[in-house]
Image 1 (cartoon, rainbow, N blue to C red):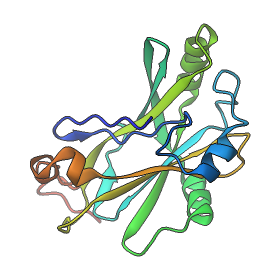
Image 2 (spheres, one colour):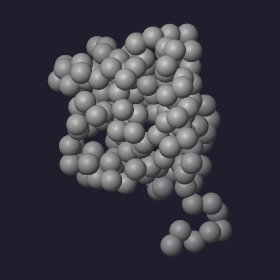
Image 3 (cartoon, one colour):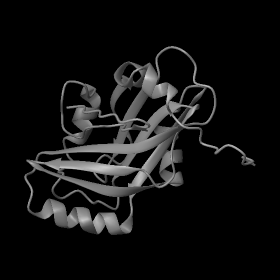
Image 4 (cartoon, rainbow, N blue to C red):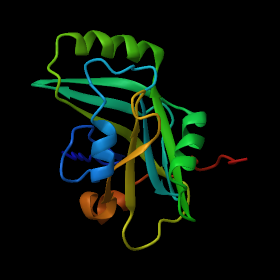
Length: 186
């Protein structure tokens, strides 16, 4: 089940690791071997495919995990090697970028403790505050979500959604610039 939540100026880009209709059939097959209760958290990677004009803001990415009625939030860090791997698994179209994340070492420990007492059905979401790296074109802002586990061995597509349609024009217009005013981006 795909779940997306929005707050200005934070846009939470969510993905789900449970098999649901929004996930392509080939990805559902690939994820069948992944047991959320035992999968290697050090190998877990989540990626977001987005327009070049959007960027995740540094140190804001987190993994939201729902296990039964419990919810936990765990810090993520960008993983450049995984970003390159994701681009090999699904090369981005011109004008788009893929950013991949991994759990921080401390977050892996926290999540390990969190999932020990949890049910096997788990929903995983990735969230990050967004900023504008340039002009945002009119029309759909398609965001794609991907997941890689030790069992899949590669990034598999989860879902795509139109961020503009979900968040609304006001939320997109309210995104801050990635470069604070008065600073040189170089």
